[in-house]
Image (cartoon, rainbow, N blue to C red; front, side, top):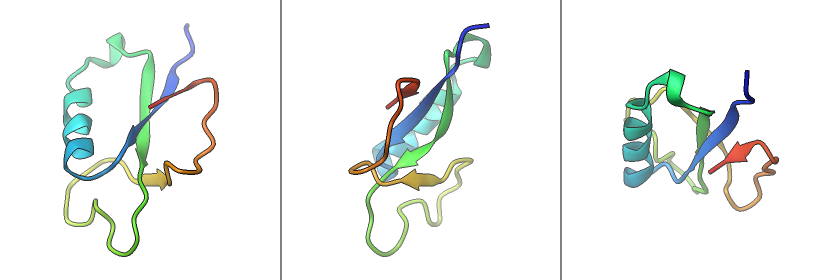
Length: 72
């Protein structure tokens, strides 16, 4: 079985949340990735607060350490 890449959405505001919805439409059998969460810098209130999402902000895009198996 091929390696599944980790996929991170950069930004969790309007467009990032819309991307989450579009990505969920891709059948799991056709994905070579697994969505891990959002990379977002914010100060104060989380952009995800008040919005339904199965994913969290997992780090700051400015200093998140990506590996060779990561997609953004």
